[in-house]
Image (tube, rainbow, N blue to C red):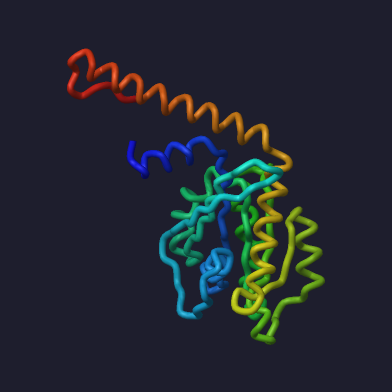
Length: 217
């Protein structure tokens, strides 16, 4: 067995928590993910389509694989986002404190859009980004009230100046979801792990019987 195969097998044995960042374009979603990874801040980022990072996170001595998805916020990509939203456990809504519309669109579009796809049994986070710019067009108290209304964990932050706060917020959201759904994550893991091994066994059996194509589901 190669090292990659060993890593893949270890990956399969750990529950996966899927996190997705959503919001209008230029709110700093990619910078937030980079801050979470410990990467240096850059203000020249723009995301098209989607991309994700993964890391291992221990919660109460149990290892979880965290996938954090970054998606384009432009209007023309919202239909694409639907594909990547499916299966998410934690949704982080991101707005730019210097852009009032980016905040209004969280309540005017993004929350409803997500709940139609995922329902309400998810953990939500609300992030007001770019507080380092000192030109806020949004009110923190209003944002706190809105976060309480939608049941979200709230924070105002800066990907540029407060990366530690971003790490704490995202980890808190993940831990909140795991605390409520640990058993479900385990059940999903064992079901999918078992299915993958059934496929491998059938494929090997097909080759042993002289079937060059084997068997796949």
